[in-house]
Image (cartoon, rainbow, N blue to C red; front, side):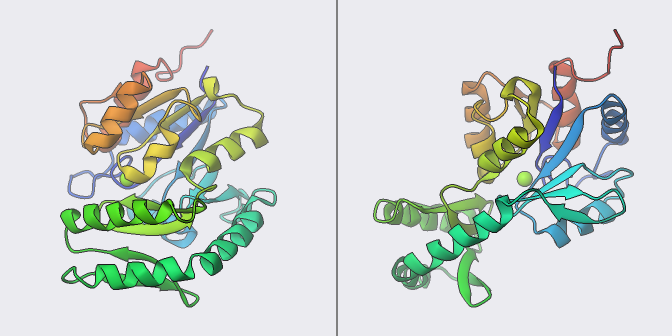
Amino acid sequence: MIRLLSTDFDGTLVAHNAQPAVTPTLFTALRELRANGVQWAINTGRTLWHSEQGLKEFRFPIEPDFLLVEERDIYRSTRNGGWEPLGDWNARAARDTDELFSLAAPLLAEVLRFQERFDGVQAIYDRGNFIGSVTKTSADMDKLCAFLEQLRERLPMFNYQRNTIYVRFCHHAYSKGTALTELARHLALTPDEIFAAGDHFNDLPMLDGLHAKHVACPGNSCDEVKKLVRTAGGYIARGTASEGVVEALRHFGAWPVVKA
Ligand SMILES: [Mg+2]
């Protein structure tokens, strides 16, 4: 039985170019699942603040139980509109990430030089660290990621999370997948009890069938995601974004909730 949902936000719950951006059926499904004891985590590359803004912008009538943000940190709802870190995971992640940025400094200098060839590329900085980039085109990001793959051979703890034309550098121990498994450990749940859905590269680590057994992707997902979900025995929806998520919840028999 599914007891935890781990859903990406942009492109999975929200279709930015559609009207409505989120089907009201998703809200009904989430409400009913929650009333039946199923917990819901949004697992996103957004920051905590940007996630809260997203929930407001798209008028979600309910809040998730957990926000897993920046493909790394885990926050639990305090039930009064606030969020608190779950255990010491975020502190450990911050420590490991600081270590990564100090060891990866020479590699990141190479990344800066390499990406100069791309027209309109922008480096993203946080607290003085070069933490990621945004390119003008997907083709440029393909090339940048191929370069990053080569660098990983020289420093195995160096990894990156790609979402469309954005990339963020990270410690290899932290991803949507490892954050989900940490949350499951905390809730004493096994992968059999977890549903995960996502649409893009940064969702791959939670869609391999290891962290969640019931994996799905909406019809608008990138080919790499569809391929992994297929390999993991998951469900590729026809519907876009939230319509696809509702379709997947039906497919796995999670919703509508059948009372025993
Ligand atoms: Mg997405």
